[in-house]
Length: 68
Image (cartoon, rainbow, N blue to C red):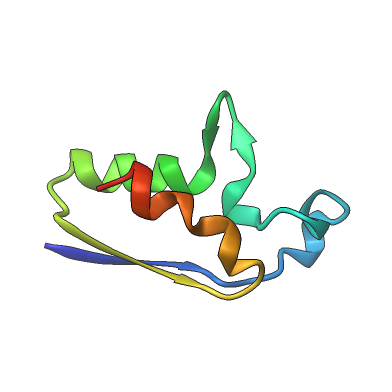
């Protein structure tokens, strides 16, 4: 099974928190929102996850190394 996570928005309604951090990278209890989404999908058998980024896309690079 495959999934697509849309993480390209600027999160303007969460400013000033999202001025330097994409909404998907906000941490809640030591886990970013996107890590939580990926964990949730993996627990349900999703094998391939595509993350669509835009705003501050370079900040998502850690996902390539840390999450397989």
